Image (cartoon, rainbow, N blue to C red):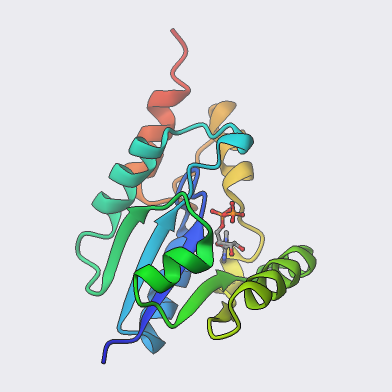
Length: 161
Ligand code: ADP
């Protein structure tokens, strides 16, 4: 039986840190489904459709990785996809408290789904989608932090007319 992990998030936009985690996840799971939340409350820079299309393009050659949108309770989505685990990333200490709350809440709702935390490569340990957006908005280069397709999309978004 295939071991499927669900990697949920906003991915606004997908960074090399996210990609690093997807690759690491595929080292222990047969499939990783990147589950993109609309996250309307966070007023994302990229629409859900834009995020889905960008991610699909970036992962097209990564075997075992796929992308979908979800807008239900996460644990229900995980069950629907027959996932065995929720994959989350732990960067610097700042992620810990929120991630712990989330994982324990999900366990309370559904005790048979585990949350698996993985740490990205050191170079991505301080990388956040917010910082990437901020740098790009001022015309700074983000090419070391995001895939090429994302870099292009950011340039387009912040193009001054
Ligand atoms: P959310 O809206 O849930 O915070 P994100 O898209 O920001 O979604 O992040 C999704 C997951 O990826 C989270 O578990 C987050 O900790 C992790 N993550 C984000 N950036 C990185 C990174 N640079 N390295 C490793 N994990 C990361």
